[in-house]
Length: 125
Image 1 (cartoon, rainbow, N blue to C red):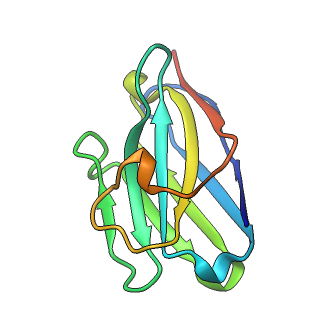
Image 2: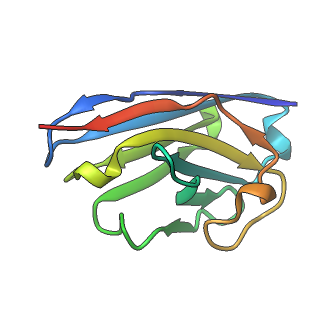
């Protein structure tokens, strides 16, 4: 089993920045891909970004390219999502997810094996 805990969410004005963290514990050696998803009220959960342990390759949704950066600290089992130039549409609950196999692209919700509880990000003036 792998446990994931997100932190770093909060309230920010448009144009502001936040850094989300995902701390993994348990059998983390079995994990390859870590992804960030978000879910706005009344909408489906959508992939935002992902990163592979095996080759470090990163993927981003078109809506966040150039604004968000995902990074990984394998030694400490941490994954970060730096979010800059935040927009109102970025509001939602952000989830960290882990997949045992290497995913190419953001991956689908069903392809991830473990999920965190989520952290709220609210962009509002």
